Length: 260
Length: 274
Image 1: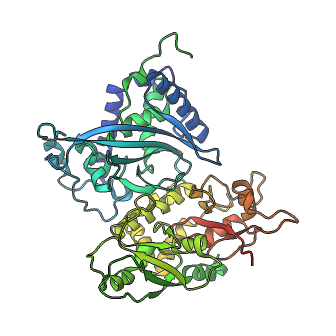
Image 2 (image 1 turned 45 degrees about the horizontal axis):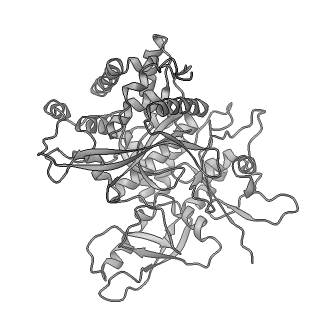
Image 3 (image 1 turned 90 degrees about the vertical axis):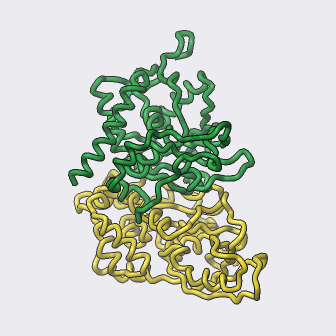
């Protein structure tokens, strides 16, 4: 039990550290809104998305709002090209063998023995020979989960020839540092799931612990009376695991000439 | 609750007679005989089709490849319970249910991959967790131990009613003063649009304190499914193959007619014209 707590706390510490080092400005973003507490209702989600879209338009960052035909629901969507080490030539370690019987979040909080060692050895770099990278097309969707009152990141990935990536391939392109986090942390496992609005297979990051880790981050920010955008903050924490970085420009005040 | 235990049994032991036929385009060494099975409504296709796979692989040239199923041109989503697939796509047709078996050309755009039963387990537990997030803010499922989770899964996998319900009844508890769950975990399926299902927040009790019914839910989520006065009936509302009265309290339905994943799966299908 003690181990469980220590490990989880370490993870939170890492998250908080990231928050305060690279996202200090994020909290001051002009396009931010007050969140009363740590629960995100659907209306807040929409408002956060609208603000994110406004900034994305200014930055030409490619986010759009997609409406589902015949309903009032929708989601944020963005596509991006991502260059990853060619698995044929790279010696980047692939996904650690799954020893868990239950590959979702329930069992993912207890670290396997020896994980600590692995972490120390792993400096997160892949040894890649010259010019050996492949370009992949990623499509990201941000949806609202009313069950968990959180945003959820869905995505799919294709080769430039249009072939869909398998779950194994997607795991292999998750940065090694994140891979351990995803398998052992409250951020939770990556798996294939039906897109709840489109009915097609997507990959997603399980949301069942999102509220928990967001609570820590949000409380910390709230203590300092900083306004914030829940969706943007959340995205800056979970996105990088699957190649979706939130540019720092999102946190810099727009020019005075920009519309309020 | 005790009086209604028979309902839980009837739901659990619901079966659909099914005939599996190999897709004629598959390369075989000799002709494949059809294979007949009684499929449990509350289970998932990958859990109950080992024998089907063995049967057809005997005549196949191919080695162990991913099997998938299709009914009249529609790939069958293994992550929906068997009974939901039948009600949604094949209700009002002649039995046995005729399913086509494929080993080639896996439809990546339509179906999730299912390389092993642990994927089914993860999906099943994830649904139970989501349902408990709705019912009890995840408190019951988080208070359970790993072996309790295992008991739910093993109960389903091995078709053990008592084993499953000994644990599942905890997920069905609620305080009498609240009069029901926080929200009812439900999904309404239909085939008339690409959208796979409707799932939103809905409370079992109205702000005035009266019990919400199945009719109230449909009125809010999918009013087209209801027949108005003087109108010809256009849709059937099916749960486990039956049409429950629209006056049935939703809380009772959630406790008794939910699938083992703790969701109430409701299918809205066109009424037979005959």
